[in-house]
Image (cartoon, rainbow, N blue to C red; front, side, top):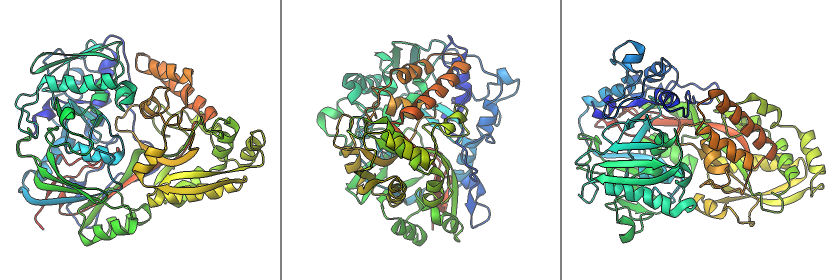
Length: 595
């Protein structure tokens, strides 16, 4: 078993410990959003359930143990484990069963000297973890780079990755890490604290221009007192700093790499992850080779990985069913039941952290008018979009917090909902009472185009003419820019890679959020978000989140309409795959049987 398992800590226990350490944040953990979805994987053949365990949830051992008594903060150098035996009065046996089951499933499967082929929906934006931000970039970079801390959503567990162990959290304004010795970059040089310091110094130097800056803007200085020690000193206590370190945006880059090459296209030698990139054919595929000096000995358990860029739903499904794809994370929802039950296939669908929404530009002439924004929101039937574009595999959205999660306030449903009469009334109060015409931008993903087309029809009922304009994803994100009055609205989605209640709000909708595109700015929302990271009082946290949701429902800087289920299917010879809600694929314990 990997030694990280014995040194990890589940997220809920970790955040409880922070809640009693120096009076900082106490978050009981956000659960997966509701929607009546089946978390149990389906399989056409018997005996594969162990390899296709369901995504995280209340029934998982780690999540269950996390709901027990809070553990005491660990002293420096002392491993922290799930459910703290000292707190619960029990032993630590069985507390890592999710990880262990993954390892056991593939323990007896021989190394596969072949290729695992997986689909990717769009071309990556680039491969620099401090610069590139689309989902496909995150997926591609997870194979190349490693973080100090990682998070496994299935077991709800943070664990040390490049760090030897979890840090002492008794002082949430300073975190010290000891690095693993002997970790190699892909160019053969050893990772040291200088590389860690340089990575975060770069983020601080770039400031708001760097996408990770919103996550790490509480960071003051990074010290590297010796080659294997790193000290993060914060301006103010921030309990979310450790979870933020688990994001690939905190992936460690070899010092000096950016001086020699453009990492967005050429990450050669800059990472220390499980694979090295060998080829990137733009818009077609990315090929990887197993890194033989990877610090996790024995992993990966297959030689090559290929991500194939397949935009068309029919082509993607055909390649999966023919065996040209070994795993698909983008099975068309209308076909999921049939595909996952095909002989030789397995699959799972489950609530995810992906939300579909219409981004609105508040410095555009139309976007400045709150009545126009509200009119559009009232005219869009969220339930119809879930039924007709997600085929029921999702949940209607009413804002940036998912229904069924601890910080969701159902009162928002009385503010943001479908009502054509209210839509017409709001439009009559606007600067365009007789209606208007605009270009509705969207990504060229077929189901997003379908969503935009249905929204077009809905808006037409109140005399708003939307011209659906599909763009390739990189072109879309290039067009939808903060401060550019040249666009008004676009249909897209957001996936939270760190499971905290205000993640999308912090990054996308605070005034200086690194992913801010709508030019939305509300000082009250900014203040409420800041307080969330510092207050120890759970009632204040929930009150703040309620205020944020209700305020944003009034302001309507975007129109959220659906939380998606993630539908994944794979060949039965793929073993140990773990389905997680973050829309990123994790191949930690995946093996491939000879076939």
